[in-house]
Length: 296
Length: 181
Image 1 (cartoon, rainbow over the protein chains, first blue to last red):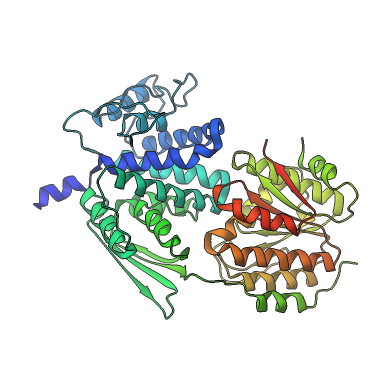
Image 2 (image 1 turned 30 degrees about the vertical axis):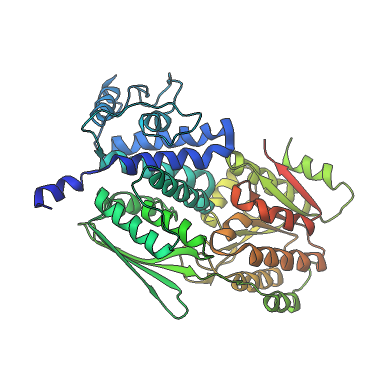
């Protein structure tokens, strides 16, 4: 790949990755029925805030300006025009912005989804739009649920993988390691990061070590959400990984060490827990025997 | 209906109820404030185990909700800090083992005069623990609380991931209260 092509790759990401994210997001909130709108509206407002604060769209200072720049951003990325035109949006369209973006995406063949065509030649979307969605879903879930929002993020990972497999972007394998490598290969090719490597530390393994090159999610989104006090991890590669490893009984804990360079090189260490019970009968018995002074 | 009314309706004759409180994620925060206010008004000072949001954030939310600062002490296993104690909080560090949590619980119940325990939330434990361990932990905690005659609430956020464990936990609680609207 030429140097120019590489630069382009990290300003844009494969549209299928964006579609998978939106599909996973909506699918994982489906069980809430109409109430999912509460989350989607919070996401929409966080997304608009992100786009304004990153200078991607104009601030709502001058009348109509922000709406025009948002229109332009969405149109340039091949998305429709049914989205809020004001910040904050008082007179909204019937569809939330997340839903509008998702409607334009390619859907697995099933009832309930309208299919629209994506303009030819727009097989990639601006990274900033992708990271705005990642930021928005982290922010909304954290504000609403705190750390337990990670359960929803990991479920989004499961749905994203299903979507990517259904679209032929990733070939399914019964071997977790093979499938994981295919997921990594896809995301690197899609423009998520220049490279990704991982290793396990400890015997039995207790630490998951990740190394990325040029990973925009970490420089732009993760840094920001951490600064805002969130412990959630929305990295698409990670949440897909979490959901895959969970099928083998593995659990992921917090990232207890992370170094992010301005060029997007990332080194992180996260706690992992192999399958098996971690509060045994013996632990329960020990706890029951602990002397506790009763309240007076 | 308020959480307190739901509890009173389901366990009218029990003096120190241990309840499993299932909460819709859309109204999670308001229901938690509602529930903690009820427990605090009915039983006095309580121990709040927070696994979800830092105790510093919760204190502000609760004070805004009309709860006096001194009505709660905390075990905080979400704030990213090495283990240490202050007057009102035992900071465990983020996502600690269930055994560490049980030791901290015993310690806080011994050291502080608390009249109820609030676990927020069982769902968070499911992120990094298997459901059998979480169920066993909750069972051990409720047994301990019963032996001390202490009421408690275990919060479970309504999600796909918690469905299996809800039935298990409900067996050793006095009531399964659904605060879904």
